[in-house]
Image (cartoon, rainbow, N blue to C red; front, top):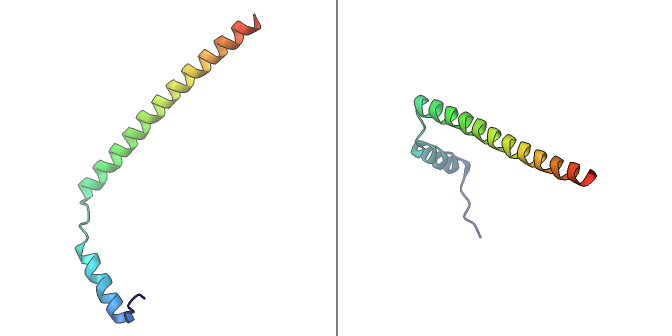
Length: 67
């Protein structure tokens, strides 16, 4: 069975754990946000080009079969 703690102990333990958290600086948050947007744009461009290639290839095959 799990040990039970009273609400006061729980609150104290929670505050102690939150105090251990290392929060990112404003600069780190901005840099990671910018990096995410850049990587999302690169991924969107990549998948758009792949989609265009597949669509063109499939269209060429279907036109070749239609004669």
